[in-house]
Length: 345
Image (cartoon, rainbow, N blue to C red):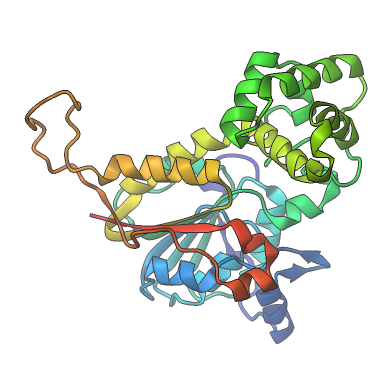
């Protein structure tokens, strides 16, 4: 989401890579396969494209490049006068997607930074549409050496960018039970949060200089939820989610980036956001709601004094778009997805 400073490191794919991509490369790009590495099929692809309402010569942003599936589809809707900006701080994703989008017609610019940097990378009122596909990619989960999965026994990491910040195991060894319990509640709606947090902190302290493994976390979860043995994988997934979101500062990142996105959009531009669990979705809905209000006066005022003309977003769809049964059957990752579409006003 590569190293050094921002615009110096923008990767102009059209200029760097051979524009004459072979048919074999095109097929691999469509499938999300490169040198044996696989990225998931884009979730609700057609719904995302329809939500963006793409103009061939427009300027668009993909704030979660990942394997480049959505970006590849957007780029193929643009002509040589179009521009696609893509954000990702995961250097593996940047390398993969840059190859995948070789030879596309529009100008393709990769910003190898977190999407919270949007306001520092894109000028106000310049984008016709912005897409967010929140959460982690299937590749990050499947690549056990990344430490995102509780399957296998690699040390806990959970960082989107392994070059910055502290890993999950480092964080667990320094956090206090109150802070961890708050993270479990906020990021995953966990029951028995304080008891679970206390046991996790005790486990981390007992490990000392040894690495914390998924099996260590699993033992703690099983001890706190002895009555839910059949649900242990779901509970583990939520614990990992809560820790991952805290290590990466994901909710603040989403809020900051969505606010910047409103400034970056032209009037009539589209904001398309896909989330995969209730915590993310609530964050998206509440942040967008701030910009749907025409009046921003304090609630206790009996009469509007702000002018009542502050609305900057409107819903395109009254309710979030959900995946079809056919898509869920083909791609289980789509099961919990919700797609919200807004228009800049």
